[in-house]
Image 1 (cartoon, rainbow, N blue to C red):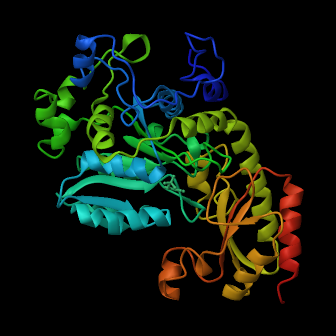
Image 2 (tube, helix red, strand yellow):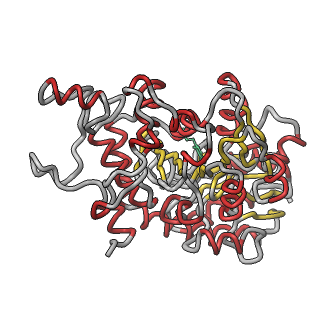
Image 3 (cartoon, helix red, strand yellow):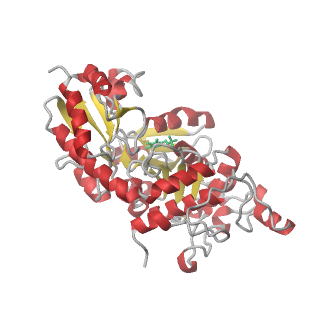
Length: 438
Ligand SMILES: *Cc1c(COP(=O)(O)O)cnc(C)c1O
């Protein structure tokens, strides 16, 4: 029988070190690995044997984190990457060719909107943004050039829950995989692969690492998407690769007996993301960061329970405050996303949400200056409570109309509620709100 989530958050992927007996995961701070002999070296390079070659392509400490995240998400294999954005880049790099298109949710982390709309343009990758829960808008975007549908599970700027089963249905009806950024939920609150997603990316920088001290990302393959059934849409996976002796990845790695009890699993996408994308683009995760994130991951269930409980109490407090005009948190009964939240994140709706101040832009600027316990900064998922006024910071270059469309209207404040005592979090907001003019 499979173990519970908390047990796996501690133990998956990290047994005691067989050589030294070290109980904590050792940090393998090395660039390269000695081959057993010339034949072993040749086999590693030809992908006929799996093993360590060079830390840009793989590292044992990073591998422990990959195995743990793959286990927690219920995937077949994972790839540790230097950052969340790095993981996104590698996922798209396997799937996309010049002239092909990503259909992405409009409700995305701001950095991802930049990555998709500006940086990827230079590769010739197109993007079309849609309101992700609007089925007909999504259908309308699904032309023949689409290679992937991309959304977050719990979406930025907080409080939006994606109807992943509907999105997966539409993607699959058009023969493309569904890639989900599960950063804001973490696998403790939501596992997209159980709801039809094919691939999952994370910024481990946020709740999984959880302590605001290390940047990292991971890309996990659900192993279920049938690449070979899609004609010539995914040439990286379905055409012979000269560098690897004309190997076709979807054939060579489509069914290997590496699953539990020797079951066959499809790791073609994972191997391609490592053997081409990570190898050639280079955003490798540092072993030290993998160690920090593994350590953070041990307490993920404890922290997420506390984050969610504190966020709900804070949202309830704000919803009753006279200087607050609205609160958008899927955990609040009556919220627009409450039902989807109950379906996809039954343990809690996360810790990031937004609210509006009746005093508008100026009140937002003043509030972030008057809080004392909250840190005013551009991050989420720290143990500490964080606050930002997007209109005067991350979204300041936009017009008011654009700000509102991006969920960052001038009156909007975003919180990432930490794991302090809820009374202290609320008391800090209370004293800061009291200072705003009536
Ligand atoms: C932070 C974040 C990212 C980017 O991750 P980095 O680790 O900063 O590269 C992507 N998606 C979401 C939802 C994020 O919050």
